[in-house]
Length: 280
Image 1 (cartoon, rainbow, N blue to C red):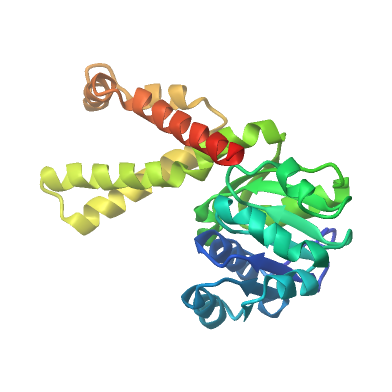
Image 2 (image 1 turned 60 degrees about the horizontal axis):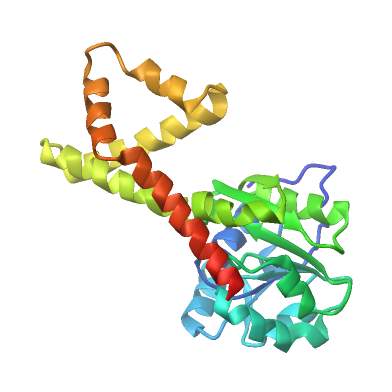
């Protein structure tokens, strides 16, 4: 288990609460626990779905409750991990128990910081984060944006926490809807690509389990090359495409099928949906 660095911004006994115990909350909590930055006993989760709470308690050793107010009262940092349409009633419920010492982190897609701040006491520290589900395997891609009352130390704390479960980059709020469309929804695009690649392998005679393993490792390896080589992905693509070879023939088919345009359209559609959720 990884240990915290001596210059860590994370207090040793920091209490973290999750309002909502769905997949994203589970992924974040598991990442915090696995890397050793937050103890399971210092995490409290609430959710109306007892099955979600049972998972948090039985699989992760996290404390559970049905009271959202209890989560706020007992936590230094509260992660708002509910669906966008539930944010407003939850904030109205917990607002009386939120103090200026609390740090509220929202991962609700599309909900602006200002909307959250208006429903909480003046001076509440709010940070909006767009993470993604690979937090479950400590490979998340997250971007965070601070609210008006947030201090630099608060942003540094949340950034360090998020970097325990992947990469995390500070950014402005105006970027977060596009982040939602790209990395927030992106794992689904990648899973579909892995499934389709493995289908192609099966069509051409590979056993299903081998095809899936090869497809997944290929995307993993390609991603690592982009992140670690510093080269533009177009350059890396060109390096695979030998003149008159197999890869350039395959690329021709992908271009003809609108592969790039489909991915661009997907990011655009998810971004616009995130904006719509925020407006509604």
